[in-house]
Image 1: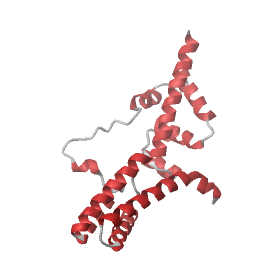
Image 2 (image 1 turned 30 degrees about the vertical axis):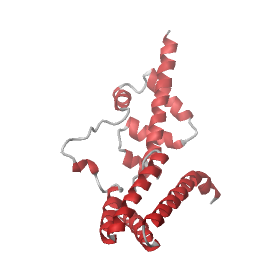
Image 3 (image 1 turned 45 degrees about the vertical axis):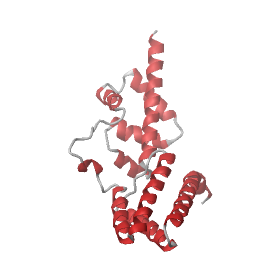
Image 4 (image 1 turned 180 degrees about the vertical axis):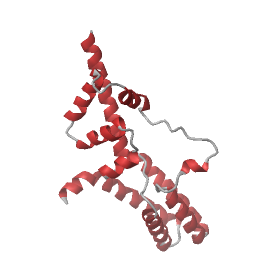
Length: 198
């Protein structure tokens, strides 16, 4: 329990501040606390039942997005609670992995993955290339085993972030952060290789 709390105390603190702010604004906008409770509970139930929840990578952005969303829902509830609950269900669905926002646009989103060129370089070159060997040594020196999983599945094998999220049981933010760390290690490996060549 203590280890779990140490790992998630920042997220719990942010959630507490976020929830307190949202409830305070709701009580200020709406005539009764019941409407605030209906919207909050309905949103959380629909969002958690319908799929894996999506979050902003930046906690501050997540806080402001949540506050703006609920202020909008409370403003609609001030007019009609039924309409507000329908809109609440819609937004709860949008914020899960089952709702693909890119399908709603007429133009195509770029499918290019972040660090794609570096990943292609690693996949398409000899594993014994000095830069790749140095990168693998740097990855293996890391204390966190998660970075090794990200390197193996995403960087070497080209698997999806979703698959790695399921393997590591973590959110997309942490997988993306680990991938960014590998890109940083690649830059170090390249710099060492260039230095050794001189």
